[in-house]
Structure formats: structure tokens, C-alpha cells
Length: 84
Image (tube, rainbow, N blue to C red; front, side, top):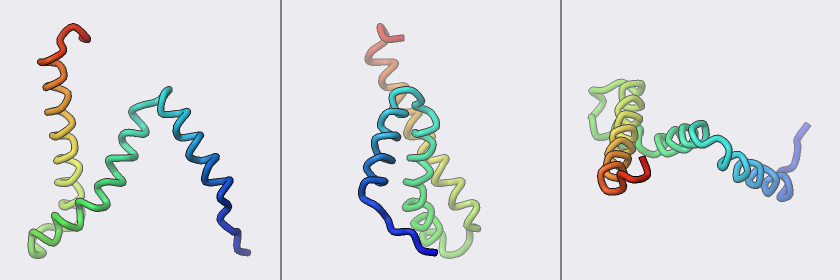
């Protein structure tokens, strides 16, 4: 039984995510990083010429995102210390 994709359902999903973003930042940020890792992991895997396993490529991609997030956080802490 096929269900058709409804434009209204998409808009409801987007509005739900938008409302939850204000309440819960961490789960949505983790979801976004994992989605972006779908683009990064194949690039890392291809650059390694098959030396790395797919699992290792995923781990390197996630580690890269964590490193970038930490660098951004530290820059904010250094340049805007009154917020913390």
C-alpha cells in the first residue's frame, strides 16, 4: 500500500522541527552533524584509497565536525567572555 507524499505533511514536519529547535538544541545539532557526515564520509573513504574501513571513515568525519565545533566554541569564549 503506497502512501503519497503530501506537501502539508512536509510543512508540518518542518514547523515541528523549527519549534523543537528552540527547546532542544543538542539532539537537532547531532542530527544535522550526522546528515552532513553522509556527504563527508564517502569523501574521506575515497581519499584513503580503500585503506580505511567505512566505519573508520565515518568516525573521522564525526571527529572532524567535533573539532570544528570545539574551535568555534573556543573562539566565541575567547572573544565574548562576558556571555560565559
